[in-house]
Image 1 (cartoon, rainbow over the protein chains, first blue to last red):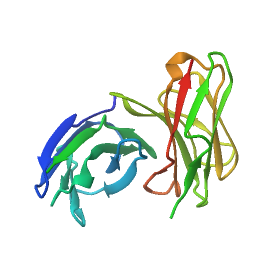
Image 2 (tube, each protein chain N blue to C red):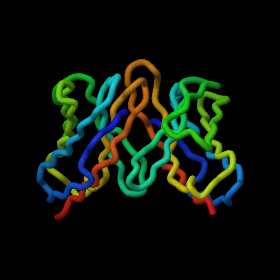
Image 3 (cartoon, each protein chain N blue to C red):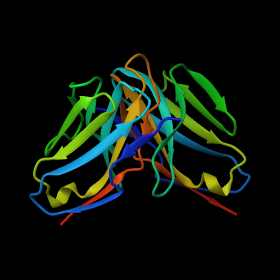
Length: 108
Length: 114
């Protein structure tokens, strides 16, 4: 079967750096994507990795190691507005298989 | 900017009713998806469509059907609503079936079945 694991909750302070890990067990893996969802809002796309390595977009970076079936989302210079749920999702056969999400709380 | 519009933000229906959830996207996207989101269960794919009049089952299609008569519109139908279908329903679209294209989501419909 397909499964993704990510921590259920992470807490950090403003200005800090936080890393949210995602490990997966899937077949037919195409890539790893990350989405952000604020309470009551819609998921929004953050990043996508098809190849090993780091992808950087502003304060957010995403990493993938296909050999380790592992990826992470790195959030730098945390701001209060980064408090949200973060989902990793594996792309398989043009569909997304979603992790259960990590709730990030950023405290002053 | 892509706009995915779901017809209702909140909806209350009764057990046994036939329920229609509508979704429209304005960017000529080929792919459209219906998910439900429940606490502790994440997003689960109900149905998706890669083209007009085409549909494929997702992970939890039981009790649901879909219709895609026009490219921009994807409807989710609860044939006979039950209380265990109370949930947040999210519609999404993406550009094409070639490679990976990010999914763009609507604001969701919070459906309560009484």
